Length: 144
Length: 144
DNA sequence: ACGCAGTCGCTGCGTCACGCAGCAATTGCG
DNA sequence: CGCAATTGCTGCGTGACGCAGCGACTGCGT
Image (cartoon, rainbow over all chains, first blue to last red):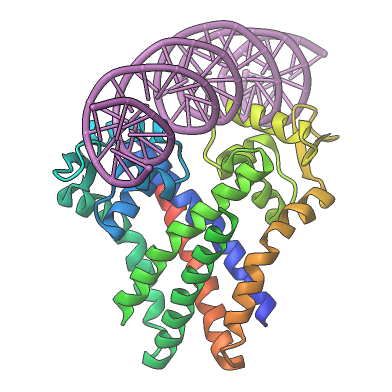
């Protein structure tokens, strides 16, 4: 049973990655750019260096990525008043909402699925998903 | 509660994608190449055209991708005896096992998590994951 | 039987994201 | 008041991708 769950996870990864790739293409950006947007949307503003580490890019590539996001209006550069070397990258709230809206259709399907689970079952699912995300992040940190 | 589950899904996507990117880099290939390997491993041999559709590539790019995978020894080209235009791409079993082994560490973490769920709870998780994968694939097909 | 449209996979060419190396600007420590 | 370290940004080369076009092949229609 446990192994079946692991296989289900592996199987789910494929369409999830593919779906995000389709969204990135639709938005006219790399999925790396999209990933950076997610990081900014979830963890708040960050410096280019911080952002580069989060998406596994060199500082140079991150510079160009930020420039693309700025040009497309997804983020903006804000100079750090305390350290004039630093720049803080802020996500544009409207852009974040607009990108998030692309998940509405998929989320609706998931909602229909979740309607087939009662409260306690959904609690189990939520508990598993949260810990799974945590474990994946752990694994990433360990390999970094 | 349902919305929290949706947020948990969204949150999990980030490290999942990042983790796969790290694996691809470690293997010296694009994550597109890795995705193609997954498709072959899960759905069995496929033609270049079929593979191109599954990973969202043009036939030309798929040709080059297959050439990379062949050179790296992950797959092999097998001519179709019935249609001499076609070529069937077969994954190399050893390579698939070797790549799959890269998930051992992460799977071990997930196993430890799943130990905290009893049989019926794991059944709930499995049911959700399976349907979620199905819904994501549906969404992809609809947008294609 | 035969031609011809359709399909399949493969190759030039240009574009663009990325890593690497080096740069100027700025900070904080000795 | 230097001087090493850090931060973000720019040339340069590499490589993956899309586009357009090619030859090879199939099978439908006449």
